[in-house]
Every structure is written in structure tokens, then in C-alpha cells.
Image (cartoon, rainbow, N blue to C red; front, side, top):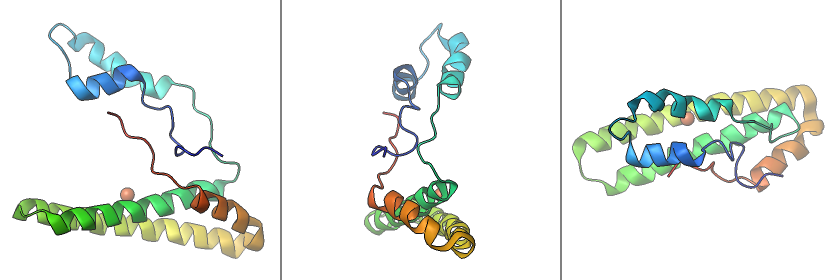
Length: 131
Ligand SMILES: [Fe+2]
């Protein structure tokens, strides 16, 4: 089981460096290549059963929603408060969609998908972000 989230390794060093520093003078022609590189990296599916992708997203959407709610509670800028409220509502809609998909899997496959879902939830970690 991958414990670093399903998108581990999708952020090569040069993309992280670009995200941190931006383009340098004379470097603009390579920006396109840098942006394309992550999409060309080998990608291995981190799960065995399709329901696990939706289970991962289910938890991730809820975690993201809670993050925006908690951040909103500690900021004072009125525009940022409104933006975070909208983001939180948007994440709630994403969560509802994923919950509907996982529920449908449970209706169709029953006990056969309980262990795969449980594995995802028990080992959940937010995916890495580029730094
Ligand atoms: Fe989302």
C-alpha cells in the first residue's frame, strides 16, 4: 500500500523548482517543456480496485473542505473569508459526489468492496504538494 497518497512522484524536482522560483530570464522557452514533463512521467496505479480511487477522493474532499473551514475561522480579510466559504461549499459538493459513487459501489458489490474501502481510509494521507 502506498502511504504517500496516490499521486506520489508526480512532482519532479525541476517542476518544484519552477513552482518555487518561476521562470528565469532567457528560460521562458523551456517553460512549456517543464510543464509537460510531469504528464510524461511513468504513472503506476496505486490501487487494485476502482472503488479505492473514489474512496481516496471521498476522504480527500472532506479533508479539504475542513481545511478551508478551519482557515476561514482564523482569517479576518472579508474577501478571503468569502472565497474560503465558497471553496468549502465547493469541496462539500465534491464530497457528496464521491460519497454517491462509493455508495453505488457498495450497493452493487456489497461486502466485496468493504475491505478495499477500509484499506484506503485506514492508510489515507493527503497527496504531496509541490514545494
Ligand atoms: Fe475538491
